Image (tube, rainbow, N blue to C red; front, side, top):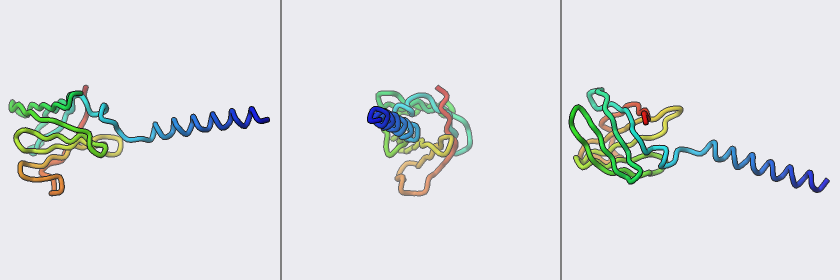
Length: 119
């Protein structure tokens, strides 16, 4: 009987660990890759987040450069042009939120669009 109780405890602990892992939010590695988003005019463009913390973008021929970090479950990009972009999990998808030069993430955002990881 003792063996059955011990085996049951081990199985329940494993199931609990699996459930916690399945319910946890995104990790930094979930954000590395290429994302399709939209600018303030609604024009689609791509953002690439490197494993090394680099960020690049190509918006209507404008090459954008910056760095990104994993912050509170989201990717936060600091662009060299002064803009800040955040890509965060939003329900079953992701949302891109951007703040123009001179604004912080405490200000109302300048632009919001859906974000889709394409690679």
